[in-house]
Length: 116
Image 1 (cartoon, rainbow, N blue to C red):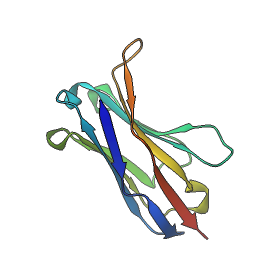
Image 2 (image 1 turned 180 degrees about the vertical axis):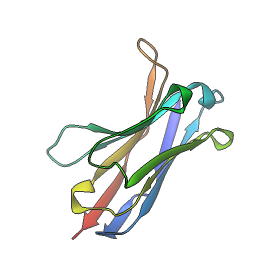
Image 3 (image 1 turned 30 degrees about the vertical axis):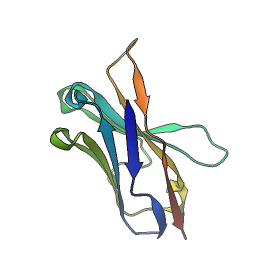
């Protein structure tokens, strides 16, 4: 299963970006979706997840600024990022998964750099 992420780039603090991740899988709607990020020298962390029943989880650091969404018809998950901060600089990776013991599929990551 291939996931292709895009939308990263170099922006200034306060700007917005929208990340996209296309999943090349016919059963995309059966999967939960999530975005993670990894900053230089840091561990990967969960940014946002959209799971069963439409429940959404956000990292405290992005609440009110980031929005995760999905379009099942396009097999795509999005991450709208507003009011970006330099501390949001990281490689952002998308993930689709079903749950414990099931396969997890990752995208290749897209770099977001926020300058002050």
